[in-house]
Image 1: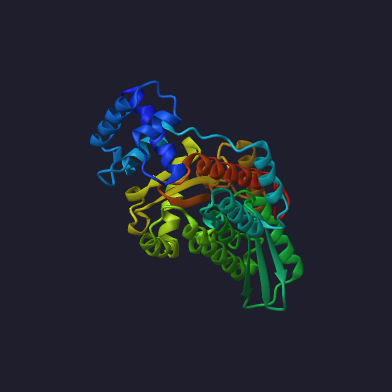
Image 2: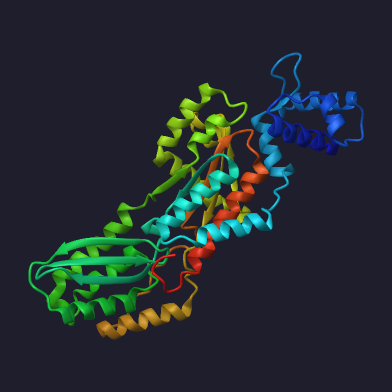
Length: 381
């Protein structure tokens, strides 16, 4: 589309339809918008927009409503995303800063986003596969029983119980824990597991090789078994209160919301695309999900994996490895720099208020990123 006036007409139609959920006529547009042309000219522009596939006339005597193509052009070219007000931003910050741990933060984020948008909110917890090790604790539970507690950079805490074939001295457990943390802080869990297995072959820790193997199995298992994050969802009931929502469309939509693996894949893909634009939007058929054919999905990634260019940190880790084993250390494998660790998203009808939804999703993702970054050495949020 190249005609600037028709762009203004399309924007006016979509904004009016989002606000009223009623077909929009040329008379309404000329009365409510300063388009600078007659109603007849606007009517001709709307007819052209219909011919080009941006608008559709549901009934002969009715005005026009946007098509999926119209919404896509609106989101890409015409929508004015107005940042949340200072009061709203402070409200988000205050609400989320009151969280007691990561799970509470994500639950609060979902409820808050649903409240702001009046739509379904989905927040994913960081997967262990995208997390790095902050600290590993090995806690003796008995002569042969141990508990390991893995604390990640994203605030995730995972616990596992293991049994050893022989009794291990407390001093040896403490020494192993110290070396593991010195060598693997900031390293992804899979790589940390490989290193722990290597530690078990060293002269120093060969007597507890069985324990090292068990620890390595648990670390590698955490990284591989939790590729999918947990989802926190809120606001599902609000869909039934949306204006102009066909109740027959809700059943497949609710079914789609139940398919968490499919939903997670869609929003994860959108969040990766959003790295350059802040938020990403999939409209109707773009979701490739029949249950979401009359819905739009807005998503943004949050958090960020550590940058592998941190040469000082890598030099420190490699030095510790060499000191512990008495040999040179291989380079540390790190997650791709600046990759989001999880996502925030909103799901609503195609006639959602895109400007508000995109701003709200971006704001919540921003504050979650800040909260994760500000954890520092604390175990939680």
